Length: 388
Image 1 (cartoon, rainbow, N blue to C red):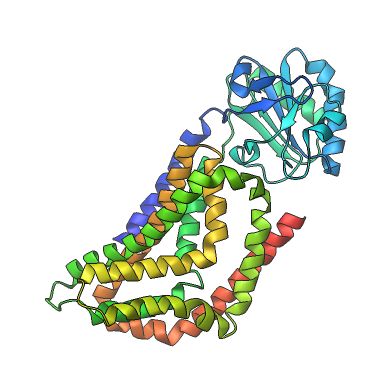
Image 2 (tube, rainbow, N blue to C red):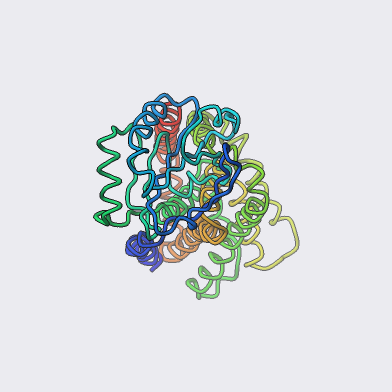
């Protein structure tokens, strides 16, 4: 049942993508470093807008700038040109002003590049006269390529292209799944199963017991991420300038965690403190079946957060760049994915009981090694992608 629900949820996200693609391009405000004037994208409705995502030290951006300077006089009356410097941590308004660009140029202080799913510079995005993104390309473009893209946008020959909300929501979904199986928390799963079978009244209503227990443990996981997410959403703007480096940080941490999984350190140093959370319940007065599993869920969620916090931060802040509603939606999807998995596994335990525990115990080392290799590969790719 839970597997069908997950499949249905993913299908709905993919089906919804054409609807999301038809939404207007995200609005933003830019402060022109030369004139001092402020402009919003929506104020240019009725004209085509070309957005140039660039950086001062980007060689490809310099090449693209030459192409833009060649075509700008031809389209100055019908197209609004905007250059956004995304390197707000290293570039300054004075650096950008020194380039003396003949069109609007400003610092990307609103992380607009995240709203448009821009992952590298230079990137060109063209918005048509009705406010829809109709063109996007990363890398250097020749004057001829720019003319064709602009002519198509002006003539209405370009249809709306996808905008990144669906991608961010899918990332939140799969990141939530990954957090559940993170190397810091997954070794606690056999312990959770043994703990589950060891408490509670054996009244024959095993599926009802599994539903209550799984939901309680899931709420413990959700509570951890909701608290972290709420703090992140509230203070997110204070750390938004460090988002571009998040991919490199995540990659390095994944490599380290993958290597640690081949050693006993991962169990002794990372997992053992959280295992003690469950053992403390055993020595206390009876608090109730649901309350105990909620506490175990809190420990499980805290352990997962220790491994996946950088990824969690990147997902939530990336969605927050689109808007508060997107940030909250991504948070709910992320936490919901982890919570649903806990419920699904608990219901599965009710069906197969102790046989599942035996299978997991026999394959724990194999699962750990495969996970370690995957973590190292993914981490290495993220580091290479960021540095390249």
